[in-house]
Length: 383
Image (cartoon, rainbow, N blue to C red; front, side, top):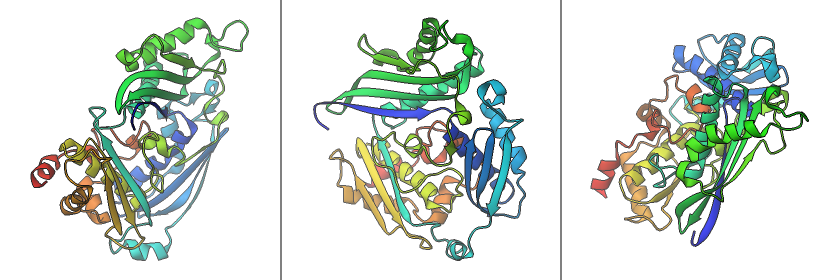
């Protein structure tokens, strides 16, 4: 885009009801893979006031104690007291799990994709992580909320929170942060005498302890801060908002800067290309940008259930490529195995790594194999 414009991205903390569901679903997946690498998982979770329902299709030789696992995840998030409106010890947990359809299995067992669909990958040179700046700032803000809560520095904070960041650009270059939005669940101790809003002291603490360390020099005198804009956020988490697995897909990827593919991630084993091929698309895009072959790289894969090779590969570098986009497609097909088995093997996706992915974004985190740029030098040389 040319001229001046604004881009906004949001993130949510690990105590947000949708993210609670993502974490439970991925914890189930991890538990299956820990004991049965051939297990098939499509796990969905629903949370509401005092209730967790875990359902889906799971085929495995192992056993998952769903009750115990759900309460362990909730405890790890921080729902450990009734003051947050939801408690790991007292909530009800229901399980409704079936096995995978044999009609799907007969195509997947031979190495085919576990579903049809389109998968999107993206990378850009805006940040060291090769991610868009707005979503990286939004993720860092909610992680800072968790740090301030768990460290006790802002002990009045609850597990539920959301962030939003608006960045001003000029001809593609980030100039400044125009607006910061923070919605932080809290206890009643920071309400003012009216009981309708938090005190000015608490608002300033949240800005100085959470926003300032993350936004830093990107803020200026005109940067706007919106903290618990309705006044207060005492009633939060599943008590106030129903959660469902897979409902924060834009938070999970690129913050709305580019399109999202056809499916969500959490609770799906890596035979589901909704997840694994999207990870590979990010890996290919990041290696292309890391190789200096483009400043921005958008990739689309298309798959059909039961077939191993993608039916299509498309790359768009928005005019920033050092070589043609079609040449990059050829390099991607040459140097990356885009079959489900190849993706699973190259990215080591049969390990119990998924709970860690279920909050704070699936991309821009060096701990995951799809973020490695080990093929950048090879791509650069071959180009």
